[in-house]
Image (cartoon, rainbow over all chains, first blue to last red; front, side, top):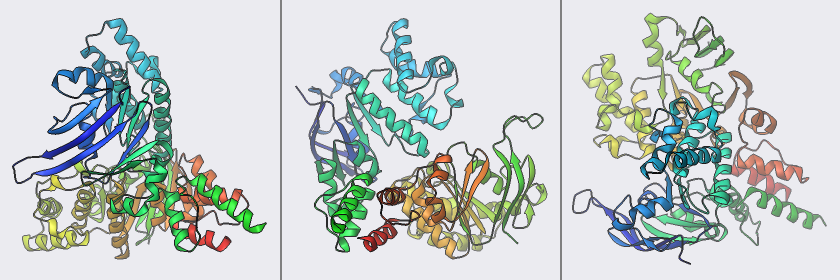
Length: 286
Length: 277
């Protein structure tokens, strides 16, 4: 079975042959398996957005290969690729444009020239998935909704295309703690129901550590490392050199190590670190 | 005399003749000159409404807002209020009015009719204060988010304010940009400027000396961040999450370790753990 996403030797340069020429990606290789919750991290300007823009052909490839379920992302396959890859950009609520929530969510399926019944079904399904009650929200203007509701409506528009691969760029940014919790729970639910493969881009290493099966670290357009979060964050020096932060648990653990308290395993979640410390204390008391 | 005083302030977005719902209700708050106050609350708690009352963008439905001795209801003196209390907003891309950094910063003083030489002086001073001096001839749209916000702060500084209100000014930034803006806020505070920092990111509360929590238009907590962090039920009631460090302290305490639940940051929690192991 082909990988959900397979990227080979991908390079990209902006504004080629101008004074603003900038290499954004260089020789990127990795794949994402079907069913993975895959993180992509990197400081601002590291190439994350350029990279994900290749996944559904928003940027035309200059060099290398990007395959979605074995299908090369190129002009003749764009329609098929775009029906498989759902992109949720940063602050997707800024992309709401229709008069009603219904029309906004229906925009994609309508462009697929689906029958009216099918469009209805898809809009209902998508709103239901994001937790917006169809009867209550369908006829409202998307601009009257609260911040968290707007974001969910915008995500529903992507889900109405029934993507297998969901790409989320900073999906929790700017939300208050409750809004953030809701959105992350939604993403987990979506992975179980509609979109088995999730690509999750975030600056919040605590979220990455607790959600992702594997994570790729970009630095200055190059792939620094890819692996399970625990292995990736174990190399604290590399993470910090890439301009990133450590998960809070890992950071506290490093500080404790500097004070001579050593650990056999890297902690990436607060609960793990608490557990390790409590066990340690129990052992030292007995 | 406090530099900001809210006396029994209520505000509604409804029709003033028949208001149903108040965004803020009977708020009493005093802020002394030189304080660094974090104003916290979930979406819809009224924190941005409160911010907009502080420089007369909104005026109260009832009650009074006094800024530096001037009532914001006094239309004749509203420009004094705006000069005194500057605001930095959430979206770095929405606050630029000029294409070149120094022109953007000059916009405010130009509108005040400040003489040219003094504008130059103020612009240079303001850009240096936020660490953006070397970018003054740059084009504003090519800056990073954190840099744009620092230019926005410089634009406020060029007005020589006594108070700067950060209305979720860090929420759209990456961790680096966030740190840049917070360290500028801290520096300006040291130089005597009163800072009101509106946020729902608990990691940023430790920067402040005082935390004020809003819930459904009312103040439910006013005290030291340390005290707030040691009261997780207040945070939960306000639909806020305790920062990861206090979560760790809580778990350790629940597991029988005698740790202060009000730890503020990674340093403090590390120290506390070292003492107990």
